[in-house]
Image (cartoon, rainbow over all chains, first blue to last red; front, top):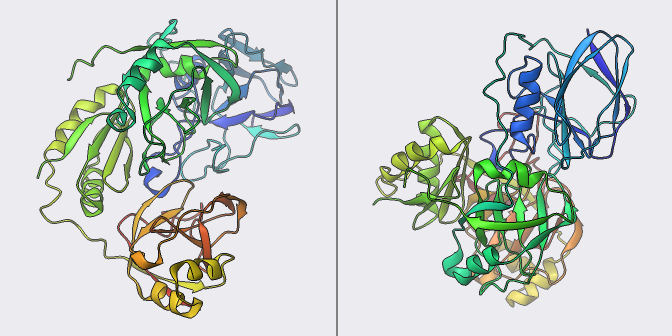
Length: 276
Length: 203
């Protein structure tokens, strides 16, 4: 069976797929790839189903070795490309020049044991295959179909102003907070991971500190008592007890997740969806 | 009675109901309906959040939840768990003193109450239980502990919580249960689910 051997791995290099569905009511995060469109594109590029298991590298630079001829797709924050690897050939995963998360799909998909139906490393709860280490051997499955059409795969918008919808708790924390959130410039802090990116900027002062816990969604912008917003990403917890002041539009979130510490962000109120 | 539902962002729906029983009824209705595109349904005290895989699934979820009558016949979970508790928590004496009663009186009252699993969150299998007698309510610890052992039973702000694994925590610890609350090899992986009834049986 074909396999890829890990020669070098950063501390935050994991395997990811579509995540664990329908378990959040038991406290299990969905997890899965942070940049889902990138996962889908690299899989499509090698003929895999959209949510086949891929390697997610934080910042890139990891090294792999193929133990048989194979094909890999690279994308996300690195230049997208498909690379043929010969037996015993080594490959360096490119640096994440365009963001944070680089994805590598192998034709056939990484075939490791699933936990609760997913091969995603849940970095918040510690479920699923552990972070990759040098010496790990990643078996390759047989999911690939080269007739896959990748023409329909597209990038989300990556504009200067991130579209957001008003959050559900503004009536309790103060409507003005949404206006203040939109008018400020924010910077991504180094405290960023698969769970959330934390922003720094003018201190927002909510009228209440906490709320009764409620379900959280990807893109939800939470305001803890320190007044510095937190934007939840793929590995967010199932519930949260701080008010949500905004929610990032679905199509804009992958590009937000790829913003590096120090990046400046501005938010703009999204146009109403057609169904309202 | 109709459910007040609105989009949460553009790929989720947030429903507000009157109480926990309605929250559980709505959770059950949405979960049973197996609506297309739904990836998670999370009930909490007075709220149910339904997450979908893409904005295109939001209208059908809004449509469905607006037609659910959460007061008609709230489905009561038929599951009841008897958890074996050892009342030996680090904060037990402080908690009893704060309630103005002795430890024996505290544990007797705590173990005689009926609890309902309100929801799970914070960590896989971490259950929040309603039903703590008001006289036994205490606030959270001023300084959370860095590590609370698995199985610990804590109380805070009128709610009882059970730690499924070693985790940081700010609840006042009154004891621990023998049962394993989360096992990733089992289906479902969590022992407790929203709406289940729980009794604590002293070891």
